[in-house]
Image 1: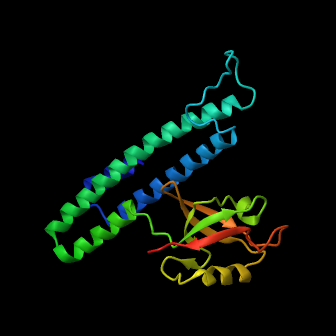
Image 2: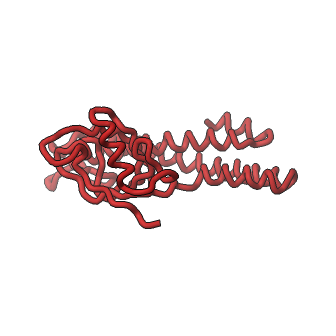
Image 3: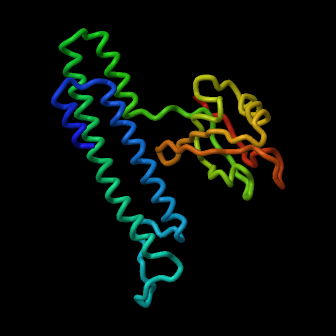
Length: 212
C-alpha cells in the first residue's frame, strides 16, 4: 500500500490514484466492522470490557482468544485507516496543486469529484422504523435506525415514494436483493431475500421515507 502511494507521489497524482486509495479505505472499514461484529457476538465484549470475572478468573461466557484477536486486529486496522486517510488527503492536495497550474475550471471539477468520493457519504432516502424478530429483514441484519441508500434497483436518484420499494419487493420474492445502508456513519452492504415467514409481508420491517 505504501509503496504504491510513494510511486504515485513521485509522479503526477491522478483521480484514479485517489479512487484506488478510497477503495482500500472502504475495504479496511468493512474489515473493522466485521471485527466489531465479532465482539458484539461475544456477549458484547467491546474494546474495553474486562476479560476476567470479579474474582480475577478468566471469563467463561466469552471466547477470550477470539476477543483479544478481534481487538488487536481492530487497533491495527484503525492505524492503517488513519495512515490511509492521511495518504488520501496528501493525494488530494497534490491533485489540487496540479489542477491550479493547468486549466483551472476543468481540473477543479475533476478535483471536486475525487474529493466527494473520498469524503462524502451518499444521502439516504428512507429509514428502517421497525424490525420484527425472526423476519427476513432481521435475519439479513437490518436494524432499526438504518438509513437506506440503495434497496435493490431503488436508490437516492430514482426514489419517489415507498411504492418503489414495495414493487421491488413483490417482484423479488425468493431472490436476494442488494441493500446498502448507513449505520453509525458508515456504509454497510447486505443481502435481503423477501420471502414468506410467520409474520406479515415479505420483509418483516417497516420503512419510512426521509425528509429531504
